[in-house]
Image (tube, rainbow, N blue to C red):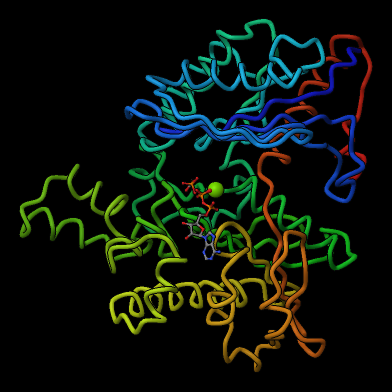
Length: 427
Ligand SMILES: Nc1ncnc2c1ncn2[C@@H]1O[C@H](COP(=O)(O)OP(=O)(O)O)[C@@H](O)[C@H]1O
Ligand SMILES: CC(=O)OP(=O)(O)O
Ligand SMILES: [Mg+2]
């Protein structure tokens, strides 16, 4: 077995690449999360948009920032490789075991982290119509990384995977079964890596086995989704065929009557592509008040801005409906966990989302809720029957662990022995 223990995690978006280099042999900084120490992280932004930016944050050196143009993902990844090399962490290092790729849509075909081959890339391409905003960029990232290190195992970790085991009654839309099946129309769910990580981490915070707890996870970032996780399994989630359904998001509408689409087309004269852009990129908080950043909305509300207030109220109202819905679906809820940019940082959103739910056994402690921090923490009162937690997500660590586990398993198969990744021992 090789002693290469580092995993480079890439989250390739249409105009950005987020990355982290994680060493799986070093678990001590975050042993509770299942092993893995971050050696460096960063982001390349505005790829293909003129002046771009790379921000690189090595664990042992000061962060660096550079502005230059990145014409494409290949240029962006070359810049990442240069930054890592400058810290002695180059991609040519024999200690690099694998590259793990966040891959948004796995369809019904991919429900486990998967070693990437030419065939897998071909199948990912066939899934593009189901995730036109996300999968093309993920595939580009995969192709560029494979060119850079063709010899290295590369693993796709899917946003949809954690939700693949949802009960049929939660996953199936109430439309003609034959039509749905012919076109692979069903609820897939997204942010699964985050929901999986956060639900497990919440159980640890409660000092319980994941199998023993029911958690509502609220992943509130730019994209936002809720999930009901019962005994470690996802039983429902708010995103659907695509990441458009469910909660109000930064620029996406979330739930609406599907007839809105017919109406805008037939009566409003908009094309399907225009409506797609409207609902995915010009709706949500942005469409309601002109800002998609919750910090800005908070600032405007403090100044008495009515549009910002209404956007906030619509966002919160939708969130409360999902909390109540998932409470009813599971019957017993042990914890509600807030995560991602808004969930981790906005005390105002958390407070409004749960206000008046004392009869449901949910009671925030306003002082705990107001405390800022970067580690998982409880914010409910001692009397609250349901624990409320803020649990920072770490999709990259989860992707690194799953990637490493796949690589070690395939090595084990090659050498006729089995090996458990640290995270598997931990679980
Ligand atoms: N201090 C804060 N207070 C309120 N909201 C915040 C704060 N910091 C970040 N956010 C929100 O988090 C969002 C980004 O969340 P993030 O999880 O990083 O998104 P993504 O991964 O989808 O890009 C921002 O758009 C902003 O609304
Ligand atoms: C699937 C999804 O919505 O991802 P993001 O939040 O990164 O846009
Ligand atoms: Mg995110």
